Amino acid sequence: MLNYLKKIFSIFLIFNLTFVSSAQAATTFVDSFDVSTQDATPRGLAFNNDGTKMFVVGDTGNDINSYTLSTGFDLSTATFNDINGDGTGFDVSGQEATPQYIKFNNDGTKMFVSGYSGYDINLYTLSTGFDLSTATFNDINGDGSGFDVSGQDEATRGFAVDWMRKDLAIVIEEAKRNGSPIPVTEIVDSYYAKVQEMGGNRWDNSSLIALLKKKK
Image (cartoon, rainbow, N blue to C red; front, top):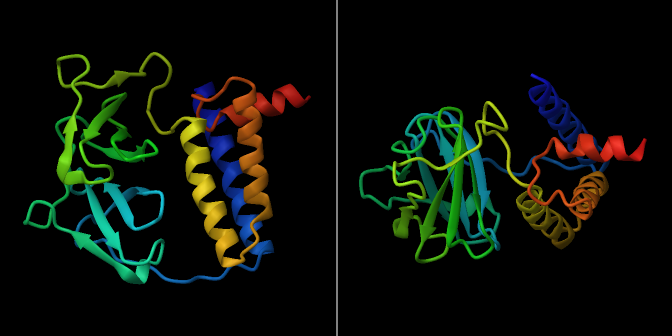
């Protein structure tokens, strides 16, 4: 219960800082892209490094859907990649019945999926980076399960600080390119950098609690 409360507080802190930053920077709504044809309950989102590929994971299909953006991070240029020819994405239901989160390594040759049912992190190898049609599950235990984290948490709802900073770097770089100041988002990124200095590279978003305690 304590770990759960810590995470809720951390998420609250991050969301408030991010939204306050957005309001102060006078950020405006740009566009939206409907994914309901592929998944009616989308949960997790990821991009490749230049924003020309977008990945959405959700509860409806228990799969990962990929989209190509002809202009990086521009949703108006997104089109669905029908990798199976039947409107579905990469199926992960054999490993996770309620997938919620997705992350990639830097070159897109490894994909990590977590959710609410398996209490584990599932790893997939992509022979071509960020190409789901080349993805295969890494059965590290020989029984179809992933890396078990049930001893540390009751639900795998977050990812390592290293990976969060990777995503934040993309956001910050894109904001700079567009001339959109996001000062508080940069502050959050700097906090995570300090967590890394503390040795918390593989901690999740609740690591901000440890940072705040250290500052006291």
